Image (cartoon, rainbow, N blue to C red; front, side):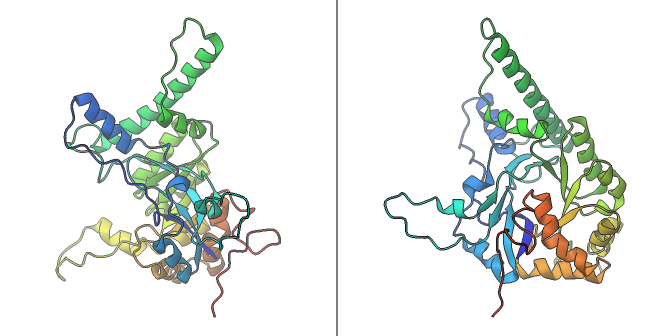
Length: 337
């Protein structure tokens, strides 16, 4: 079976709804924080195991997805999930296992972060809606997590006469990333966004991944310098259907469309470990079709297969379980009748 390394199908991970009114400015800011700072959100806890949109992926050969939350700046922690579960076995004299537990292959896989807020960032505008504000918020959150760690260490060492650190599950959830025990997957498409993300990773000694990566071909040396893995979106840009036939487009838009299917081949030749994600592709069959377009535009066929299988498993830290047909691994197979 194939592995889609970026899909939100079947996730119940919507941010908390805003109250009709806020009593104080602090209440409004706390609500905004809960929307944009959610590193403690675990996809494995909110995936709906019997979601039909998950099961439909199997018809296109996809048996496993990296379930990825999408909202906010610190979006949450992804999980590697099978798109279907085995049949329930009768359990006599025992309470049944949780259904989603049958499908979760590995969790967490990565902490997902964006340096640009985009839509749904918070009602009423204000910090950190702007790009500079978003970058500052992400950096400050990493700094706050570092400070939280130091405060806890000081408290455990001294106890008496030291203020107890506040309980903050969001800052606690960032600690594994700071310890390089959990990779950080930065959502970045443009070359400058990728470089910005890599600089952030270098500043805090993070283990970086880049998702989206539309212009990754322009920064291959920088990716290799930090051993950054790439999850390349096969949701290729397309000309807007609302544009008149004679409407002009920017050079960047034209280049993006022309280069999208060529970038995987350049990543492979550059020695960057990469896999594919479906992004916002509406039809599951287009995931495989767009991978085939990459082959047509320069990606070696065996490299495309690796990106859809064993490379994806390696990036997800599950190569001992998935990605190739070997004795002892999980048998996630698609059999065409």
